[in-house]
Image (cartoon, rainbow, N blue to C red):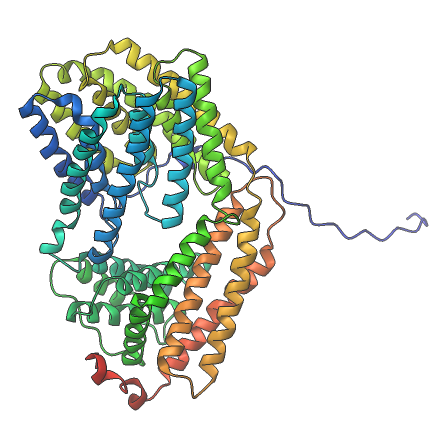
Amino acid sequence: MSDTPTRPARPSRRPAPPAVRRLPVAPALRLSRPSDTWFKPALSVVVASAVPHLTLLALGRLDLVIYTMAGSLCALYGHGLPYVRRARAVAGVVLGMAAGLAVSLTTASLTGSTAVLIAVGALLAAAQKAVCDATRIGPPGHVIFTFVSSAALFAPQRPEQIPGHLALTFGAGAFAWLVALAPALVRREGPERRAVARALEAAAACAADPGPRTRGAAAAAVHAAWQCLLASGRPTPVRRSLERLVVHAEAAFATPGPGTGGAEPDLLRDWAARTRARGPVPVPPPAPGTAAELYGIDAERAALRGPDGRRAARRALLGRLGPGSPLLPVAVRTLAGCALAGYLCAALGVGRPYWAIVTAASLYQANVTLSWNRTLQRTLGNLVGVLVFAAVLPLSRTGPLALVCCCLFFSFAAEALITRNYWLGSVAVTPMALLVLEFGGVHPAGELIGDRVLDTVLGAVAGFLAAVLVTNRRATGRVERALDAAERARAEAERTCADPASAPADRDRARRTLTAGLVELREAGDTAAGEWWQRALPEQRLLAVERAGHRTLAATAHRRGSVDGTTSTAHAPSNGAA
């Protein structure tokens, strides 16, 4: 042995997280299970499009399809919302679609400059992305708006034609609004039943296999179910039963495991299946504190509908659109990427740069990693879709009715496939978008295919380059704000739980606020984890706050379970929830 003294080993420093994260390929293209409601937007858009299409066919004016299609595509939105909120949301979509179309048509009538048209298209795409993200309108998001407004920018237009074309859009949009709300005549609590069924299924998964992943998914599903019920309108017997079911789902995910107060996983799954079916909603046994919980829901629903609640909702929306919003960098990415894609295509002499603008706009997701996934999916789907278009083009040219039927078929196929994976849906979207051009006249097939391939590649490259270069350092700031909000919500929940004088409605509201804070924290953490060029995330604090929050939720569930029967039913006569 050597007598040379050994130096004590230096403590190893924790390596800094890499600024550039590994980009996946195979997971981005992997197929998943279809959505449980895929057929709703698929059937809605077919019905909403078929009537205007066939009407124009009978009138011999299929060249106007682009304007009625702008309104018909509004039927794709709002299918996860209760019908009261869906009516307002789809009406807003129709107005937003018409506003974007009006800007495009006016610009097209005033100038033929490609540079100006591309600039306006990029600005519209960025604004549509920001508004859709802020209002959380959900899929298909801003892409449909950008598709319509960008295509209209490059269509020949005269000022005197604009009122008539907008009237077609409003007419088709009004019919789409009726189509979107028509299921309420058959099953008016359908959206609420599906939201509660998802909450029960997620709670069953958490009760069967407790862990951070299943607990987070259950918290998000329960929070979504409460939000759906809060927005669903006046209480009905069915909605009362649904609220009781969410109380059980909430208890199951807050205290998962046998013997902890939550329902058994098999029972939760059985309730979920019966809730989703067309039969009567299961009526669960009264959980401890159920009547107090329902009283709290009534109080919260009344507060949200009051003047203060509406003002708070407006302030929250403006905050998501304000200068400090974390959505702003994504909107700037959209603006830069769409402009770069459009000008690049114009420089190369491509006749339809709006395809490149739409391709770039479709890529932007919450972070760079998700945008990379969408880049792969969009490129693969468009390239395969071009081959499908080449195969069906001879059939579509056998007559106008065949063209209309082909477009309706691909509209249905796109919504049927897109929930499996975006690239699979793009295989149907691409031929539909190319066939729309045939309504205005026959175009050389080789030219259409070549332009579409070139626009897809250039739009994808330019769009993802902008996503990489335009940094989003606000993602970490959003995590820090979510951490502070979750800690405040946890402290408030602990205070109200420990105070014997606190009202049951206050305790339940504090628990729901904490659940919402934990959902926002997980969403902010996942978004920041896939972002590039930012400071390191406070991962240890994030994990600690999540764990403490879920422990507090469990404590409040136990506290609710210890309330005696007198307290639990104290408010029952006021709302009929006993």
